[in-house]
Amino acid sequence: MSSDTEIIAAHYAASDRGDIEGMLAPLADDVAWTEAAGFPYAGTYVGPDAIRENVFAQLGRDWDGFGVSIDRLVDGGDGTVVGIGTYRGTNRASGRAFEARVAHIWRLADGKVVGFEQIVDSAQVRAAL
Image (cartoon, rainbow, N blue to C red):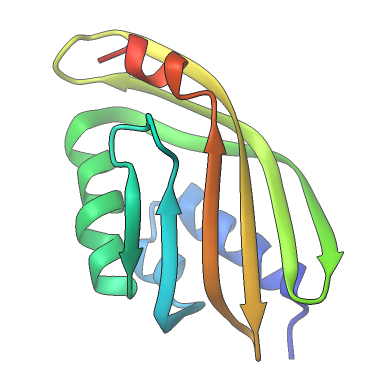
């Protein structure tokens, strides 16, 4: 069985490959995924299908080269992993690029992601809109 940190590292590796199914694979059926207030897709989405539609599909539609570079994964113990890094992308409508620091707080139980919370410098993202 993979450690919580390995599960999250595999999610980010899938993201780097553009593998949406791989990104969704570790998510529990009732995962609660929260995009930060101020972020263009702010809100809490429940379940992999809602996340695919309201987060990943929107990012793919609205941004060229949107991605995250994770600098550090921190195992917080008790099923918590924190990813710290930088978002980058270019908005298709405006043509403006951005870079914004980000932290992702992951909660896992029994090898599945049950919660996700994004903390991001959303002002940088919104300036590119």
